[in-house]
Image (tube, rainbow, N blue to C red; front, side):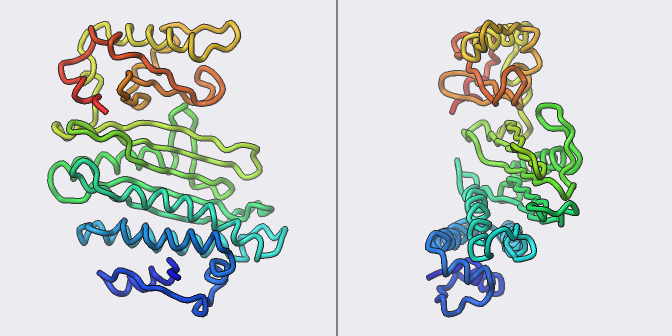
Length: 334
C-alpha cells in the first residue's frame, strides 16, 4: 500500500525517485495511523500518491522545485490542521481525524490535477498552505489559508508573460483585496477560512482562460461566501485579453448590455422583476465575467448582483456578429 506522507518524504530526499510502497506496519504518526484505519482515506492516499507523481512528471527542475515545495506545505498543513490540537474535540480523535483529512485530500487532488499538458503548454501550480491559530477558539481552532496559483513551465517569452500575469492576479486577490462583487476581504484574519484556487478553463491556439474561485468563511457563519472570475490571456500577443480584442463597433457595450438584460429577464426571472441595459452595463462589459462557449458569450453574475445565487446568462454569437472584432471568433473558439 502506498502512503503519500511517507512517499513525499522519500521523493523529497531523492530527486527523480518515482515513489515507494509502505505497509501499515510502518505507520507511526497519528495521521498515518488514521490512514491505515480508514479504507476511504487509504484509497484517497493511494490516489494522491499517483496524482503527485503525475503532477511533477515532465516538469523542468525549476517547476518541480515549486511543486515539491507546495506538496511539503500541504503535508505540514494537513498534519497541523488534523492534529489533536486543532480537532474540535467533540468526538474522539479516531472519529474526527478522518473527517478532517478527507476534504483536505479531495481539495489537494483537485489542485494536483491542474498540473498537466494542455494545447502543447505544460501548466503547474504554485501553492501555499497556512493554518493560523484562531484566538476565538471554539469549534474552529484555526483559520485555514490556501492559495493555488497557475503557472506555465518554461522560460520563453510566452511562459514569462503568462506567469507574470498570474502573479499579478494572485497579488490582486490575496491579502487585503476587493472581491468580484466589490466586498473588501482581509484573508490574513485567523477567525476565517480563505481559499484562492486557479483552474484551467478553455485553452485554444489563441487564448488561455483561467477560472479563479475565491471562498471565505467566517467562523460561526451559516454559509461560506464565494466568488468566480475569469482571466483570459492571448498567446499570440502575450498579454491579457482587452475588450477591443472581442468588440470593435463603438456601440458594442450598449448592444451587449441590452442583450444581456434581455436574456436575464427571461432566464433569471424573479416574479415580475425585469432587467435593463443600464443595470447590466457594469456586468456585461467586464471581461472577468466572460466565458466563451460554443453557443455564445456567457456573462457570470455574483451572488446578489441581480438575484440570489451566482447565475450566468448566455448571448448567442449570431446576435453579436455586427459588433465583433476580426479575431473574435478565433479567440472565443472553445
